[in-house]
Length: 180
Image 1: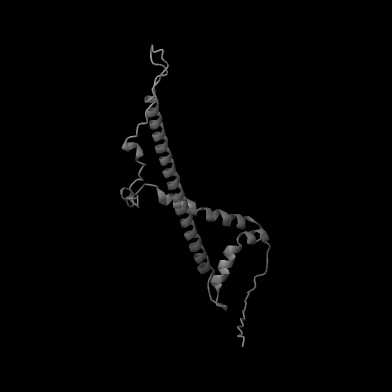
Image 2: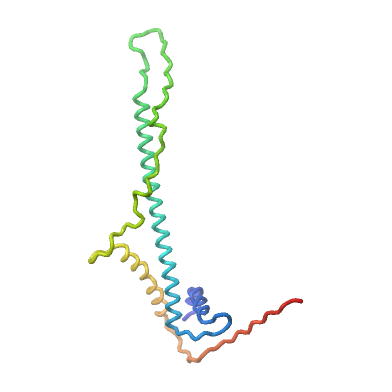
């Protein structure tokens, strides 16, 4: 292991030491137990990241849908406005008098704002249960979690210097003093 690799995985190492040492006392924990705890924590973080990305994507889709709806309303209003135009001259009248256009109150339908889609019509869970032979969100989740193996292989690919294996033990003494 090199120093940059250790710095890159410093948070993971800190979590591993936290599993081994509890309240200042060394616990008898195997390497596989520490590894399973660390993998469990990273799995939860990845699930939260996937959920956050899905929420962002849904928000973007909703924004696009509302933008399209507003654009359609603008076009409809422009069509209505161009249809109500008055001719610039009054045929053969030479008087030059042109009546001022009256202000017409818009119909009640123009005052309505687009109502948001009812949330009850959209089910919270879109899945239809387990189906054989169908790849879906689960395969995306598994492929997203597959990135861990790549990081570990990078660290293992570096040549490691041979060091004599010795047991290491640490004792931590904590003193708490009360002021009088």
